[in-house]
Every structure is written in C-alpha cells, then in structure tokens.
Image 1 (cartoon, one colour):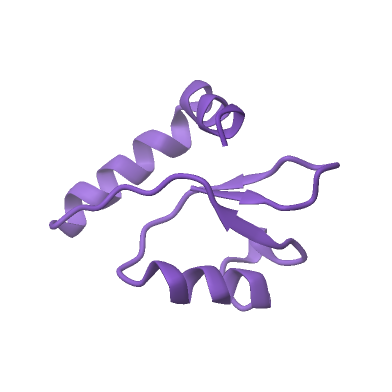
Image 2: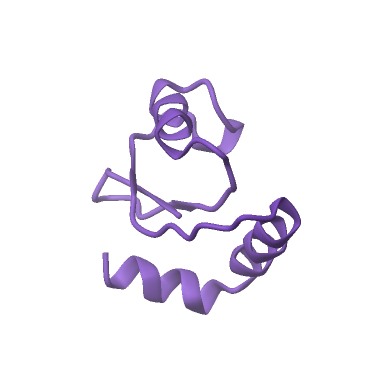
Length: 76
C-alpha cells in the first residue's frame, strides 16, 4: 500500500506488482495509474505472494476494506 507524501491530503493506493521499486518509481514519475498522478508516494505496507491470483484476491479485499486501510495509514 502506498501513502501520499503530501501531509494535507492523506491518500492511499493499493495495487499488486512483481517489481515494487520500479512500480513506486513509475508512480512518483506520474507514469503509472491515473489516480496516482500529481502525488509523491511512499510504501507503507507490502505483502509478498508466490501466486498472482492470491495477490490479486488480497489486493481486491484490501481495496474494499477501508477500516484496514485506515489502520495501516495510522501506524505508518
């Protein structure tokens, strides 16, 4: 999970990738997901999976679970 660095707006982004560092660089360069453009990001939570379908399933659940996202944001 990524958190925007701007302190005025606390925005999060959840997604899966097989190259976390490259994906973060793309988000910060503005060349990744449209919803992340215009913000600088930092990693606040990551989880490793060996199966893409499990990773996608977890991503979907985390996107829908606002309570867990707020918790992860609060401890970052």
